[in-house]
Image (cartoon, rainbow, N blue to C red):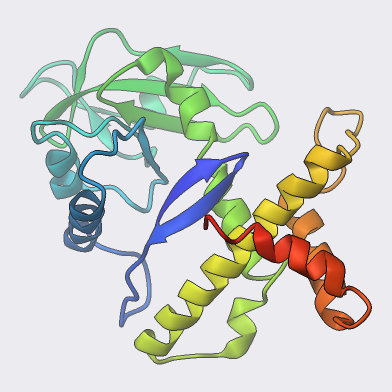
Length: 249
């Protein structure tokens, strides 16, 4: 799935239903991004983020074809990194093994990964102590905060599944039917987000001590729509208000 992150959550744009278990391969990801560029030829991508399951030599080479797509990709700890082509290679885990929780470091200059020159940044996560290693082709100084926005797609999947629409409870197996359902849920998800933002603009959602909203925009809009649909005769007025928010969607 390819999505755009806004307000801390990802909005689905394009997806491909795979007739297999596991993750997509490089060819499938390239096909998906080709579709995106064909549909949105004038859109400038700020940066593309992806977790370590969505990497590979061919995929990296594709992103570096001129004009390059700015990316922030997480790689596995075991991936080999070299200061020069044909030089001594060491795993990312060894290169960043001295980092303490909360620390990060950028390797000097560009390094060779999968036969391509990229910037490499490592960070030891403060909460879990897990090692995070990123590669990027531009603006390495913003790679970590840029990559952190990738969490928006996890929020999206949570909304589509356990914290909202319960997509997996349908037990659909046919890829075409599942794709059509996902299209409907994408529209419903966007509607819930727009309703949540509309409510928040009129009556701001309270903040907790850590500075985050006590309830997400999605949950606020989702609960509003669910209550409205549960008794349309009683809430017909606010249903029509919410419906107006779809006019530009």
